[in-house]
Length: 534
Image (cartoon, rainbow, N blue to C red):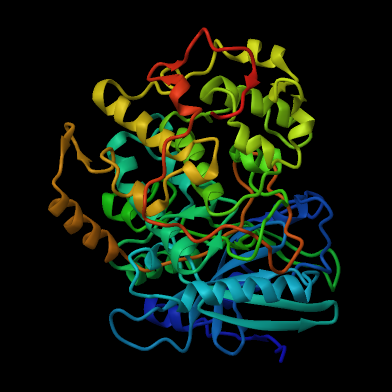
């Protein structure tokens, strides 16, 4: 049943950190707060979103006690359908190792019951299926849910563990904003294990992997980090915009970096342990992976896979393509397909397909045969039984600018060759020919130590066990950061898909792959014609 919220007050005589943590942050929300005040005429945070309405977003305040359990400390972020808050769990068990803090995603009151039902079912599946799986610690799941009822509607609240910054903000802390090979080798096993858990154990497709949906852990002692952050928030209340009417919202500025405890403190360094504890977050667009063919639009424009563009039916391999394309944003600081404009309203699928043809060669006929949208991009010659790309000038335009070799400038030698082979296992035309997450974990590039020394299988198993014991923390900020193009909006509570769960056997290489050299596409590729397989 929906519950009401309660506001609490604290005595000004409480000065110690311990008493502060037990207090209700009245200083931060009181009229005489030292917090900077933002002009009421200036839209900030969620007010800047299209179609924003104060009647649909919940007006949380620092110091609120939600569900008689969670005391609001700070605003962490906002998105199209929610705001996210750091809170203290008043029911947490005392002593080391307890979870003193949580994040709470407070959804808008316009989400449909079917939507919420579908999200809860998927979230519960992720939470209960197999806690012993190595990928369990690398996927976010909800800890609790409750509802808040107001005169404008009901807001579903979802409780998660607390995580650090998203991957795109983490990346900005590296030299020149680029992941080195060694850092990427620490990060990718976490993500692949998480995907293996989602795909093989839970039969869920994420559908929207991108840097702001991957978040870092807080290290070995999250409570110590968050105690420090909470004290800093109390001493330095965040800027806010005061309401201009009795029913108006107080809009707080988000405090997105949980390690920012001083003006010149940029947070702890991104250690290997932090990267190894990364989690896949935000299942707001996730779909079931075992209920029939699925053709609805998914993924951000920059990461859209061929089977989505062609309408040939997608499933678990869509996430693998997504991750493979995303690697370029991390290691090169630019997308693999950045030669085209992926911004909403400026993105054109025919240009994207032309780039894929330049990189991978013509798509196999078996993929085009089952594409519901193939006719939009290819003509079919009944006499020769060949598919011909309708936009050859686009291929001529891009073919000199994209190749595997040219697309990878921050690696050299054997390391580069091995990484390209790793990427090709993820970026194949035919979905069934991509390696699964479990198979990719065994690829030699991930098993290479600094200095290009490959570890033994026994060493790798020990490393895998270490990664599996990484910190178990999570949150879902849902904030609007670097855009990779619009993600398709969710419409149905559950999806219909027709792919089996990933198997361990490695499938044959794509016929398109055979057209490629290590340096990229051969200059003398045949005309953009796809002929039947013999």
